[in-house]
Image (cartoon, rainbow, N blue to C red; front, side, top):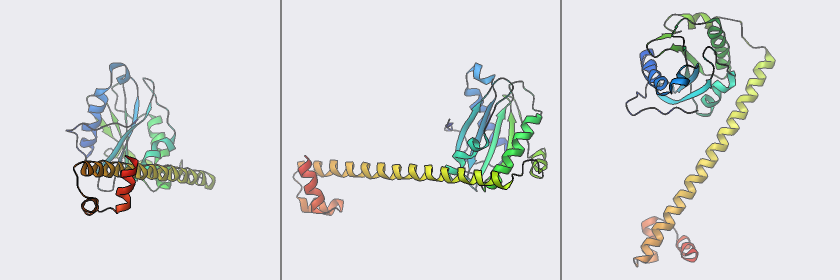
Length: 223
């Protein structure tokens, strides 16, 4: 689920405080029941730190959330994010990373490397405070881990996933281009019709809109 930024939210990430400032407000916007569940968000950025998207990847129980690594990076690949930050909340109020928190971060670091995406940090947040894996050097420790360095077969599977995501992105871009073309054609038809109704000669219309007489004639025939 795509999370929309508020008007006063920063669009650039310069520090962990910026991340927490945004995600604290996102958490507090949830209803009371959902605040008592673990959320897992991913923030996608370009290389300069500009936020491309914030996505809610999973919503779990009061003490756990299950995720699939490729679900974390699917949107990142589609939106060409070169850096991502993982954020999840602890409804208990504790900021101590669990072994499960460390383990999933370890796995995601390896998947990110294969996709050539930088997993910059992992934040655990509560309504009152947060902890950063990067600031506490836990991120550095996990980046040295060999536990989830994938064998050849796993690498190939992830590459196939990446190709599939690329195909999906291409399809989205084609649909977007088609929609933009249809919108432009609709605007031209409306403009030509309005000019004709005002008695503007076809020759003048073609010069004003930079279109051919055939286009104008086709619009006239459609009226």
